[in-house]
Image (tube, rainbow, N blue to C red; front, side, top):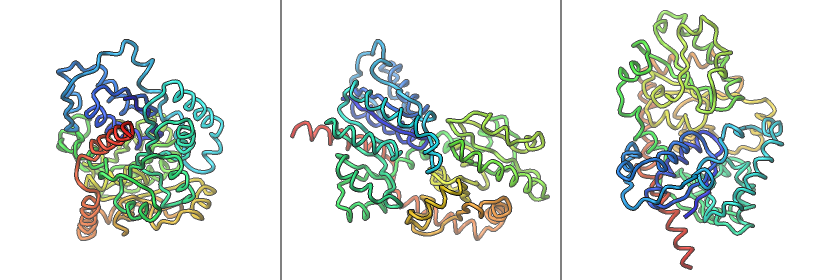
Length: 422
């Protein structure tokens, strides 16, 4: 079958890549065309290039067996499958920011519609990214394509009117958080829940099986403790958070207790060193290091983490690293969001157990002094640290076990086969 998948940001790329592995495992003849990023592209290239005896090895890190017949090689695979657009060309968040990039985003929507018609897939699979994907859902449905939505848009947090669009334009919704079940039951929306794919992404990651010494040696870093700094994946987030994070690092480094600490900034996959270096002085570079492609290892081996809210915050929970979330956005965007968002917390981990397992410092509260106080508490107050880790255990338990990505892929294929036989 032919699958057209759309992921519009880093978290969607992560979940899309694991979904693709599951699809290939269940449907060895799958043709996949997608909007995504480097992770999805890597899975697609591994599948295209692997010899039959290498197939299982290509995906062994995710414990997915790909036994069975292989399709013949596609002579010119990019003509029919593979990456259409990288998410870094359109990733944007916030009302003001979306308005600024509206012409480009609308151009991408028009192109996507034409591309779907031209390629004629069996199903269009939308991963989160609601601003873009709802437009595609409406178009694809009206054009007669089957539409699946994977990782539900957060209608339980804001813009609940989008519920009507889910009912009208989406054939099957695939949710990933346990608290969503009750919500969508009340709204009368049929869904499939198979756990959370982030559990797989963490538990099968290279970071989970590598010691701290191995990580430090591989990245040519000095031995010793470090604090993880995650500024976000979008330019706007980095612009807001980097000055705060560098000021935090400078203040901590100047104290006797933290003078030997290093501060590791996890470079976002869609960004370059230029996005970070402009905020780093020569003095900063003595104790602050930016690493790309090492986000999970940085989190897992840190004494504590400062995380811009998002999927990374939930990853930090699953890696069992104490954290504080910091978030700053455009003041106008914040005012609008505050008036329409209905949830108590901005972090998924806190939402899952409906409790403030870790602090969220937002807007003016997100400053170097407040973060410094919290980081010191995370490292120095053992009772506080242990209480947070107990809440982490509850969050992980609520998300279920491993195998979510493969289970969702299997459920999607079963839905398609069921519909084709009706």
